[in-house]
Length: 187
Ligand code: AMP
Image (spheres, rainbow, N blue to C red):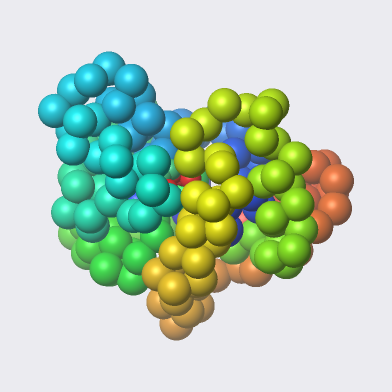
Protein backbone atom coordinates (compact mmCIF):
# COMPACT_ATOMS: atom_id res chain seq x y z
CA UNK A 1 0.00 0.00 0.00
CA UNK A 2 1.57 3.27 -1.14
CA UNK A 3 -0.31 6.27 0.22
CA UNK A 4 0.14 10.03 0.21
CA UNK A 5 -1.56 12.03 2.94
CA UNK A 6 -2.37 15.65 2.11
CA UNK A 7 -3.87 18.31 4.33
CA UNK A 8 -3.25 21.67 5.93
CA UNK A 9 -1.18 22.11 9.09
CA UNK A 10 -3.35 21.24 12.09
CA UNK A 11 -5.59 18.86 10.10
CA UNK A 12 -4.48 15.91 12.22
CA UNK A 13 -2.30 14.19 9.60
CA UNK A 14 0.24 13.05 12.20
CA UNK A 15 -2.42 11.49 14.43
CA UNK A 16 -4.07 9.67 11.52
CA UNK A 17 -0.70 8.62 10.10
CA UNK A 18 0.17 6.87 13.36
CA UNK A 19 -3.05 4.84 13.20
CA UNK A 20 -2.73 4.10 9.50
CA UNK A 21 0.78 2.69 9.71
CA UNK A 22 -0.31 0.42 12.56
CA UNK A 23 -3.32 -0.78 10.53
CA UNK A 24 -1.46 -1.31 7.25
CA UNK A 25 1.98 -2.27 8.57
CA UNK A 26 3.82 0.27 6.44
CA UNK A 27 6.49 2.81 7.38
CA UNK A 28 5.52 6.39 8.21
CA UNK A 29 7.50 8.98 6.30
CA UNK A 30 7.13 12.52 7.59
CA UNK A 31 9.52 14.92 5.85
CA UNK A 32 8.85 17.40 8.68
CA UNK A 33 10.11 14.83 11.24
CA UNK A 34 13.12 13.95 9.07
CA UNK A 35 14.05 17.61 8.63
CA UNK A 36 13.58 18.41 12.34
CA UNK A 37 15.87 15.47 13.20
CA UNK A 38 18.48 16.87 10.80
CA UNK A 39 18.20 20.30 12.45
CA UNK A 40 18.54 18.75 15.92
CA UNK A 41 21.65 16.80 14.89
CA UNK A 42 23.24 19.91 13.40
CA UNK A 43 24.00 18.11 10.11
CA UNK A 44 24.86 20.19 7.01
CA UNK A 45 21.31 19.62 5.70
CA UNK A 46 19.88 20.62 9.09
CA UNK A 47 21.91 23.81 9.12
CA UNK A 48 20.70 24.65 5.62
CA UNK A 49 16.99 24.19 6.37
CA UNK A 50 16.69 25.44 9.98
CA UNK A 51 15.70 29.03 9.18
CA UNK A 52 13.22 27.84 6.53
CA UNK A 53 11.48 25.52 9.02
CA UNK A 54 11.38 28.30 11.61
CA UNK A 55 9.73 30.67 9.13
CA UNK A 56 6.93 28.35 7.98
CA UNK A 57 8.09 28.53 4.34
CA UNK A 58 8.80 25.46 2.22
CA UNK A 59 12.17 23.78 1.73
CA UNK A 60 13.18 23.57 -1.96
CA UNK A 61 11.71 20.81 -4.12
CA UNK A 62 15.23 19.48 -4.87
CA UNK A 63 16.09 19.01 -1.19
CA UNK A 64 12.72 17.43 -0.40
CA UNK A 65 12.83 15.00 -3.31
CA UNK A 66 16.32 13.90 -2.33
CA UNK A 67 15.03 13.20 1.19
CA UNK A 68 11.86 11.44 -0.03
CA UNK A 69 13.51 9.29 -2.70
CA UNK A 70 16.37 8.34 -0.38
CA UNK A 71 13.80 7.22 2.21
CA UNK A 72 11.36 5.35 -0.06
CA UNK A 73 14.19 3.44 -1.73
CA UNK A 74 15.10 1.80 1.58
CA UNK A 75 14.19 -1.90 1.98
CA UNK A 76 11.39 -1.38 4.52
CA UNK A 77 9.46 0.63 1.91
CA UNK A 78 9.21 -2.33 -0.46
CA UNK A 79 5.96 -3.28 1.27
CA UNK A 80 4.66 0.27 0.84
CA UNK A 81 4.77 3.56 2.71
CA UNK A 82 2.72 6.44 4.01
CA UNK A 83 4.00 9.83 2.91
CA UNK A 84 2.76 12.36 5.47
CA UNK A 85 3.13 16.02 4.54
CA UNK A 86 5.94 14.96 2.21
CA UNK A 87 4.38 16.23 -1.03
CA UNK A 88 3.62 19.94 -0.84
CA UNK A 89 4.05 21.32 -4.35
CA UNK A 90 2.89 20.21 -7.80
CA UNK A 91 6.55 19.88 -8.84
CA UNK A 92 7.16 17.44 -5.97
CA UNK A 93 4.07 15.45 -7.01
CA UNK A 94 5.31 15.29 -10.61
CA UNK A 95 8.82 14.23 -9.59
CA UNK A 96 7.43 11.52 -7.30
CA UNK A 97 5.11 10.22 -10.04
CA UNK A 98 8.05 10.08 -12.43
CA UNK A 99 10.19 8.16 -9.95
CA UNK A 100 7.46 5.70 -8.95
CA UNK A 101 6.36 5.05 -12.53
CA UNK A 102 9.94 4.25 -13.52
CA UNK A 103 10.28 1.97 -10.49
CA UNK A 104 7.00 0.20 -11.38
CA UNK A 105 5.59 0.98 -7.95
CA UNK A 106 2.75 3.49 -8.48
CA UNK A 107 0.78 5.16 -5.70
CA UNK A 108 -2.42 3.43 -4.61
CA UNK A 109 -4.24 6.39 -3.13
CA UNK A 110 -3.85 10.03 -2.18
CA UNK A 111 -5.98 11.12 0.77
CA UNK A 112 -6.75 14.77 1.34
CA UNK A 113 -7.97 15.68 4.83
CA UNK A 114 -10.23 18.73 4.70
CA UNK A 115 -10.65 20.94 7.77
CA UNK A 116 -11.94 24.55 7.75
CA UNK A 117 -9.33 27.28 8.35
CA UNK A 118 -11.10 28.62 11.47
CA UNK A 119 -10.86 25.21 13.15
CA UNK A 120 -7.22 24.81 12.05
CA UNK A 121 -6.20 28.10 13.66
CA UNK A 122 -8.07 27.14 16.84
CA UNK A 123 -6.31 23.75 16.98
CA UNK A 124 -2.91 25.32 16.34
CA UNK A 125 -3.56 27.90 19.08
CA UNK A 126 -4.57 25.13 21.50
CA UNK A 127 -1.41 23.14 20.91
CA UNK A 128 0.82 26.11 21.70
CA UNK A 129 2.36 25.60 25.08
CA UNK A 130 1.59 21.88 24.93
CA UNK A 131 3.90 21.07 22.05
CA UNK A 132 7.10 23.04 21.85
CA UNK A 133 7.78 23.51 18.18
CA UNK A 134 9.57 26.58 16.86
CA UNK A 135 7.07 26.75 13.99
CA UNK A 136 4.01 26.64 16.25
CA UNK A 137 3.74 30.35 17.05
CA UNK A 138 0.54 32.06 15.85
CA UNK A 139 2.42 34.10 13.27
CA UNK A 140 4.26 31.13 11.80
CA UNK A 141 1.07 29.04 11.93
CA UNK A 142 -0.72 31.66 9.82
CA UNK A 143 2.23 31.67 7.41
CA UNK A 144 2.12 27.87 7.16
CA UNK A 145 -1.58 28.01 6.35
CA UNK A 146 -1.02 30.66 3.68
CA UNK A 147 1.79 28.58 2.15
CA UNK A 148 -0.55 25.58 2.19
CA UNK A 149 -3.28 27.37 0.24
CA UNK A 150 -0.87 28.88 -2.25
CA UNK A 151 1.48 25.99 -2.91
CA UNK A 152 0.06 22.73 -1.54
CA UNK A 153 -3.68 22.93 -2.23
CA UNK A 154 -3.06 22.67 -6.02
CA UNK A 155 -1.42 19.26 -5.43
CA UNK A 156 -4.91 17.82 -4.83
CA UNK A 157 -5.93 18.88 -8.33
CA UNK A 158 -2.89 17.15 -9.77
CA UNK A 159 -3.80 13.86 -8.07
CA UNK A 160 -7.49 14.25 -8.89
CA UNK A 161 -6.52 14.47 -12.55
CA UNK A 162 -4.45 11.29 -12.09
CA UNK A 163 -7.52 9.52 -10.64
CA UNK A 164 -5.85 8.95 -7.27
CA UNK A 165 -7.49 11.50 -4.99
CA UNK A 166 -9.89 10.73 -2.16
CA UNK A 167 -11.23 13.70 -0.20
CA UNK A 168 -11.99 13.02 3.43
CA UNK A 169 -13.82 15.22 5.93
CA UNK A 170 -11.27 15.82 8.68
CA UNK A 171 -13.79 17.15 11.20
CA UNK A 172 -14.88 14.63 13.82
CA UNK A 173 -13.34 12.36 16.42
CA UNK A 174 -10.00 10.70 15.68
CA UNK A 175 -11.77 7.36 15.16
CA UNK A 176 -14.47 8.82 12.89
CA UNK A 177 -11.86 10.43 10.65
CA UNK A 178 -9.76 7.26 10.71
CA UNK A 179 -12.74 5.15 9.54
CA UNK A 180 -13.31 7.56 6.65
CA UNK A 181 -9.68 7.34 5.61
CA UNK A 182 -9.62 3.53 5.78
CA UNK A 183 -12.76 3.39 3.61
CA UNK A 184 -11.19 5.85 1.17
CA UNK A 185 -7.94 3.90 0.77
CA UNK A 186 -9.73 0.54 0.56
CA UNK A 187 -12.22 1.74 -2.09
P1 AMP B 1 5.56 19.45 8.94
O1 AMP B 1 6.00 18.90 10.25
O2 AMP B 1 5.13 18.38 7.99
O3 AMP B 1 4.53 20.52 9.06
O4 AMP B 1 6.85 20.12 8.26
C1 AMP B 1 7.58 21.13 8.93
C2 AMP B 1 8.31 22.00 7.92
O5 AMP B 1 9.22 21.22 7.15
C3 AMP B 1 7.44 22.70 6.89
O6 AMP B 1 6.86 23.88 7.39
C4 AMP B 1 8.45 22.96 5.77
O7 AMP B 1 9.31 24.05 6.10
C5 AMP B 1 9.29 21.70 5.82
N1 AMP B 1 8.76 20.65 4.91
C6 AMP B 1 8.30 19.42 5.28
N2 AMP B 1 7.90 18.73 4.20
C7 AMP B 1 8.09 19.53 3.12
C8 AMP B 1 7.84 19.41 1.72
N3 AMP B 1 7.33 18.29 1.18
N4 AMP B 1 8.17 20.46 0.93
C9 AMP B 1 8.71 21.57 1.43
N5 AMP B 1 8.95 21.78 2.74
C10 AMP B 1 8.65 20.77 3.58
